[in-house]
Structures are given as C-alpha cells and as structure tokens.
Length: 209
Image 1 (spheres, rainbow, N blue to C red):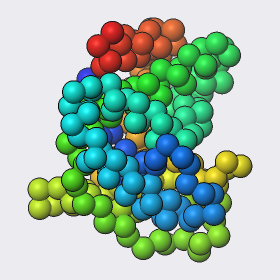
Image 2 (image 1 turned 90 degrees about the vertical axis):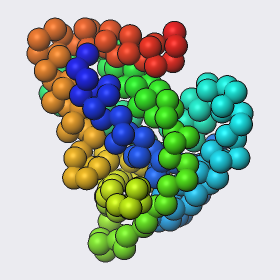
Image 3 (image 1 turned 120 degrees about the horizontal axis):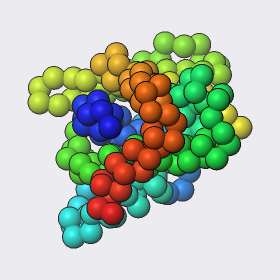
C-alpha cells in the first residue's frame, strides 16, 4: 500500500484524535459541538496521563482506549462513503461492511501506535464562526507543538445520536480527501477487494498480528 496511506499521514492522524476524543461514557447530547470537543478532549488526555504506566506495560491498552473513547463520536459509515466516493456505490454489501471495519481499524491502530506522545500537548479552541443553530458545523482548534501551532478543523453534523465527526482538516488538508485519492488509485488499478486486503494486512502489522 502507498506510504501516503500508512506513514505520510501518521502525524496528522495522531493529532487529529488527540484533540477530539471522549471517555467510555458518551457525553450528553445537549452539548454544543465545541463543548463536546473541549469536554471529551480534556477527559481523554487526562486518562492518558493517568494510565501511562499501564500503557507502557501493555500497549494494547491504547487500542482499547481508542475503541471505547473515540468511536462513539466518529461516523465511520459516512466517512467511508465519502472516502470511497463513486466506488462506494459500486461496492457489494459485503465489501462495504469489510471496508468500513478495516478503515475504522486503520484509524484506530495508527493512532494507538504513538498516542501517548501527544498527551501533554496544549489545545487552543477558536471561536465558532457559524450561527450556532446549524446542522453542520466546523469546530476549529490549534495544537501547540514545539513553539508553533497546527490548525485542526473538525467537520461535524447533528445526527440522531448527537454530534458526529465526518471529516478532519489538518493544516488545510482534508483526511477524507487525502485517503480518497489514494484509495481510488488502488481500486482503479487492482480492485476493491485488493484495497481491503491491503488494509487487512496493514492493520495486522500495526497490531502485531
């Protein structure tokens, strides 16, 4: 698989999740998008600091935390549809299910490999620019790192289950758009099943399987 998928976007993935996570119990749905980001991010980073020793002794704990904390607030179904574009419409139901699962694992596993490195970073929350009653909003944040700031914007929509993330832009680069072009290239040259198989292998390598 292209290094763009697995290694070139790694720092962006790590910082993306570091600024938008939640604890195992979902935050009440009456919070605004920015309040949700601020509240869940604070609790997640606190949990990472508290569990440093356990994570050092058991790296698999990172994956458990990500699965418990991150997943409720990301709409992987919608992200998968967007990242595949027209290829989603031509995929079989089985291929769709397999892709969503492997795409989710890719984000979770990649994040978990170096998550603890970002536990002490400072997050700046910028003022909202929407009217406050929008169905779709962008939550703007910045990560302070090494004397500079990295802008990270979260595209969210108000689903039946509450606010969900469907895309993230780091320094102006969309996560969905970045993966979309790479995945489309693989599908065009090798087919959907080949893409899924490559994701399976990559996820296995990240988890030590």
